[in-house]
Length: 377
Image 1 (tube, one colour):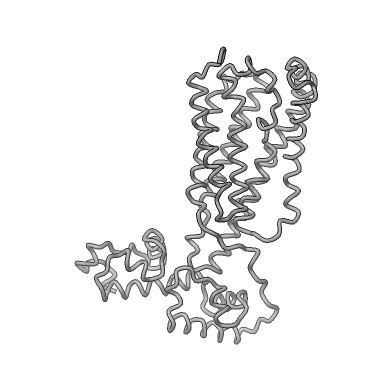
Image 2: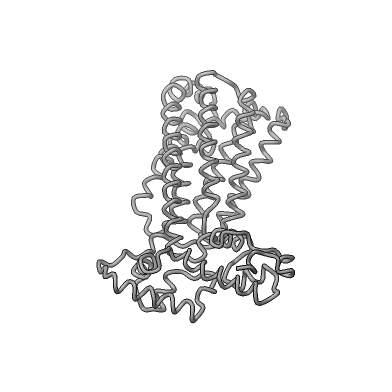
């Protein structure tokens, strides 16, 4: 097309945006954790679309299509923070959405504003749009929009960080495979969001105060799109299995008789050892409570008070002891021992074994030669 120049800047950003959009589409189509994946997929797609002005600008596209000014999908900052929070909330908390749906209102209002600004001054009258930008948008709307976007993103960062910390405690109390359910990418997401807020602030300063153009802001924009690629790939790779939900936890009963809890703890210990429930890789406090005909929160409290440790550490302690016996009595490969002991992967087995036993599990060579400290205990 005459006048359109796809230079190296536009090409680099377009390729990065394509990766982000693909990750977003993958998450939208994913059936596992559908609600959580949907919200994150929308974030990635909107983030990719927000780079449209840069790609078009570097390719001289605005000289060809000046009427694209105020195109609604190019400005969606007020959606990002709430959607990321809803992604984390659906993943870890679950339950009714409730008041959280109102978090999307600022994004809806922003999109409606840009739809009006895109159409009302005259869809193809770019001069009217530029005049509106000079008179209203730049001096009044943009500062409020930028400040609100940063504030909502910072709020989302804090809430996600606090929610993940509570979620890890919940997993420790209720899941034998707590490490497998740790949403590690949310930690990466928090780090990425902090970087994004800094980069976003730098960009806003460059455009609002220093009056920089797209070419001078390109290094910051490139870092920002690179961050989106990292977050998109990280989430698409990790979000592949359903996660336990904190909203499904049952509140502890008012009854709190210490002798009864100790008796229940002894029963739990006997059942898990005699019937080897601890070898089930996804054993949860709900499974144990169901088999005992008890309340899961009451069972959790009995384990904590009667056995003096969390459910996760207690079950993994039984697994590590079982693995030690296999090491002493068999010559199985270490991966087979890990799986037979109730762990889902060798990596998880290594981490838990080191945490509980205080030493690194032996490798296959040590098992054959019996040179590991395990065999001296």
